[in-house]
Amino acid sequence: MSKLLYIKASPRDARSHSHKTASAFIEEYRRHNPNDEVETIDLFSENLPEFDNFAAESKYAIMHGQQKTAEQIKKWTQIEKVIERFKSADKYLFSVPMWNFSIPYKLKHYIDIICQPSYTFAVTDAGYKGLAGGKPLCLILARGGNYEKDSPIAFQWRYLEFIFGFMGFTEIKTIVCQPTLGDKEIVDKAQKSAIEAAKTISADF
Ligand SMILES: Cc1cc2nc3c(=O)[nH]c(=O)nc-3n(C[C@H](O)[C@H](O)[C@H](O)COP(=O)(O)O)c2cc1C
Image (cartoon, rainbow, N blue to C red; front, side, top):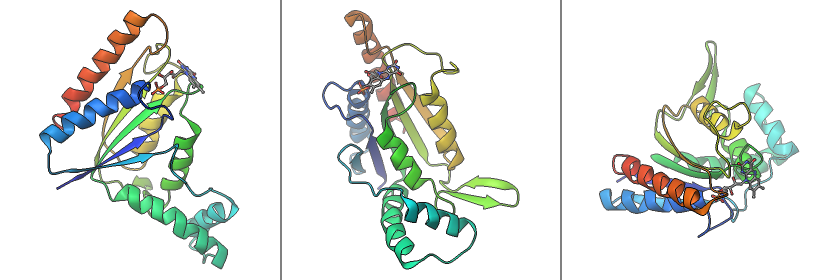
């Protein structure tokens, strides 16, 4: 039995294009993998620990092989809990709106927590090494406008592929739902084609 972790980064529910696409993905995934567990982290409902002074200093202490203070240990225990939950999954699904050409701040907060030396990446003599072990990860991206993957202004896609690649994910699949704003017929068509792509990918995920 595997665990699929679904991380939802839109605060919207039924009207969210990324969540709607992810829901179709999960429905199809469950049909093909009835014994698998699907766990959801709704980032806008989650009480994530602040990545404050104690967390940042803990990170530097780990990188420099130094001892942490009692306050840093207390904070780091909260950070570790979030990382362990993330690492407990076998497969990952993210639904992500484009916000200001990038990602919602709650997802950045989550990434700032989980992207840690000796947990999700290592610093070796040969450079950085991701520790996620090539687990499968699917990104569902919703964008109001239409952007090419390599558009210089659409950071959302490139950033997410980079940061998850940095953490060691090598099997990254991306579904783009765009445009989600404007002419209803065009938007509906984009949503339909994103759902079809989600069903195809999830059947073999
Ligand atoms: C705060 C905010 C910022 C946004 N910034 C952009 C943007 O930079 N470019 C864009 O094309 N759409 C932008 N949009 C529109 C969303 O990307 C679009 O509505 C998308 O469908 C949101 O995802 P969701 O439907 O899953 O919630 C923004 C929306 C919000 C609420």
